[in-house]
Every structure is written in structure tokens, then in C-alpha cells.
Length: 142
Image (cartoon, rainbow, N blue to C red):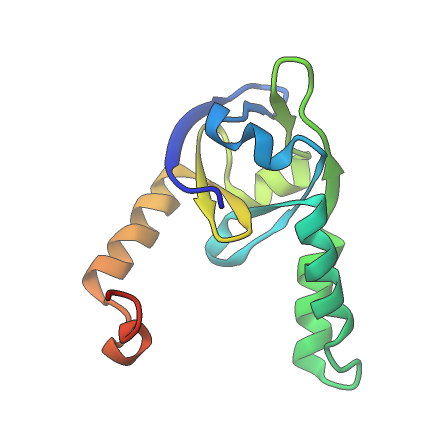
């Protein structure tokens, strides 16, 4: 499971070096797509198969399901790390996530997230200011 957060630079060609802690997680390739809160989600290929199964299971007759699938799936892009362990982020996804100059690469269960540093700070602060309801965390801490 990938965990941790790492600040990196994104170059003018949209490439970001993958932190060493995450390279094995994505060594067989990955899918990069729009995520929630304005970040990008990065799934290893094996994890993306499970995501696709979930998306395929959503009801085609439900407007919100169709909208979410459209949002999530149409932005998807297959990628591999280059010889310098860099990920090339397509321009539409960089624009969506506001990635210019700096990027935070963060681990999450089953995926990585790429964040604009200001959005990352705001997302972390939002959790501190408004923590999850206690019933969501009842079994979290033993």
C-alpha cells in the first residue's frame, strides 16, 4: 500500500519524477485520471481493473452514475514511467488539477494522488477543521 507525501517539481513538458517509495507500485504501468477535490488519481494497472469493474456496475439508467463515469473514465490516460522514472502528465489533466511548477505526490489506499500544493494544503486543513464523524472512526484506532 503506498503511503506518504512527497513534494516534487513538474517540468515544462509536464513530467514529474515518481518518488522512489512509489516506483514499485506502478512499475507495470498505470492509469492516470481525474480525481476528487481537483487532484489526479493514479492507479496501477491491476488496481484499474477493479475500478473498471465498479464503473461498469453502475446503472446506465441513472443520470448521476453516467455523469460520474463520464467524468472519471473520459479523462483516463495510460502511462508508464520513462527511463528517468518520470511520469508524463497529459496537458488536459495538468490543467484540471492546476499542476504547474510544483506537485505533491501522495499515497492513498490502492492509488496515488497528484496535487497542486495549495489544493493539497487546503484539503488537509479541511480535515483538521472538520474531522470525520466519530462513528466513521470507531474501529480505526484499536
